[in-house]
Length: 209
Image (cartoon, rainbow, N blue to C red):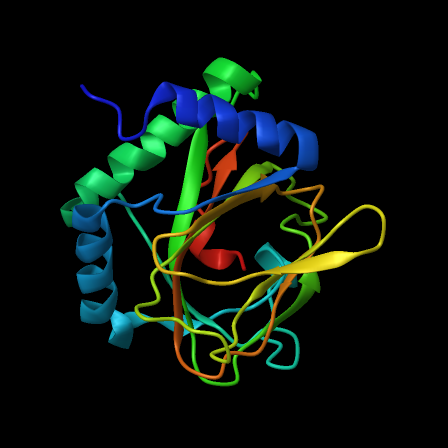
């Protein structure tokens, strides 16, 4: 089956991630996949639930820390996203083939930040669950422009940080345990497909923030 992206592009992205711990890829979703996931997103908005922080018994709702709503995806139930799942499969394969990460699963959700929604600085790991290796965020925001808010702030090891604009079809991938990040307050609804490539698959993704 034909790959979603060219191998030389993947290798360039992997080199960047290896060097900086993150990589930003524009037009990661083609027009067809983008339309499919955007349509699915809008059709399921009423099923989104308030996101929390922590895992298992530590899971709590903290609106002062995190203001988004999520819809956890299930590959069997959400079969209409088949082409999106295929792209995720390709991503997993590339990381295993060329970065030797030994990944064996993933978990993804759709994320909706309403106006004013934000997420304070954090790492994508938990004290009692640390199998998230690579974080992925794919933005679904039509006609995003400066002033709309919702930028991803990535904190570097030298103490500096920079902002990533949540432009439609842009993908940000980074090492989950190595890249602190935050989501700035949104001035309009902000949409994304967000997930993690895992050392071991989890059947409990819906319980994690």
